[in-house]
Length: 475
Image (tube, rainbow, N blue to C red; front, side, top):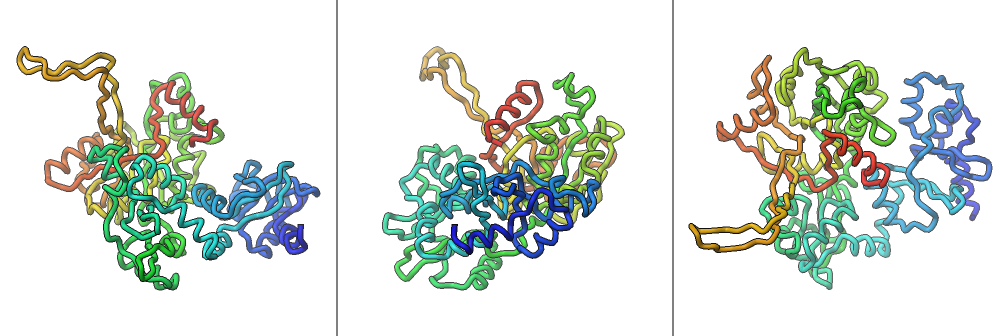
């Protein structure tokens, strides 16, 4: 290991016996946003970030206490030899800014910073590698495109010929609209991609590119040369400093969870542990990572378990307030217990475990100028018999054990403030009632297909599956 790397590691490693005050001072000096807590041989114990220190102090330890009191002992890490773009992809997916690199013996050999990897991605060799991963040919199936889009985490792919000539842009929204139109996932992705997308000429400064993206309200911007060959692919979130979503959230957490008895005799269903944390905390974590900072919770059954855990939300990085329903008011009625939102707001059932992209749902809602967007999930029913179609006594068709697809309500909604005004005050009212009312009034209600992980934890088998999926890394 060279001298420069040794010097860098000495700046980002803190000894387990160091105090919180010493760790805070070292963190400020290192400027990395996180420190690695290691033994003398560099074996990693855990990571400490600025947020860990703030939350630790809120929980009780003083500045003279050991930093091990606040260390994250199970940080996400990669092994030595990871490719820079693979590391950047994983940091994007995990929404982390620091990534420890360990050797086979668990010793820290590097601490990667997301900002540095992004800068490195501007280098030509790495950039070519990066572009190769987000280019897709028009003949490739939609199913393969979904997987590739999930792998690169850019929200869009560049549809190009083999010579990198840009033909179209395939976005997350293009795929969801195709699913709604029941287009086969085996169809070529070029069939559903956006032709003639907005592009800019190479080269362009980050500042100019960001202004174009802000003015056009787009999140991906292909950069092309005079031959329309793709030279770069800019992401708004990488150029902008403020990625917060301009919306709030409401979590309906007042249900009894009767079907999960006896697990819910002493604990409300949203507070049942999934892996190492309550289900409701996982939802709050996802909202926070999406940039949602204001979270409202409706409570009814055993509310003290929820309010006692989250408090005002500061230690979870959000602001939380509560409304206690004296009697169940339905999945929409409880919204009137909160002040009228001034901006769009997302509403979730408290028993939903999901990896849905709130960012994509927000963009979808805004792009469609909807009053209400309903998250939907494709649900397949397989008929175990041959189905016979008849006209009078004449058999016209025989289908052997067909599968029927439906879209089901996924319990996740995004509403404009005007939708709040349609909810009656002081009475039971469900989201299905609100949807029907808006439709009757001719308002625009759209569906947003949830392609990511989704599970409604309503019964014991669902809860068991959630635990299994957590252990296997699906969530």
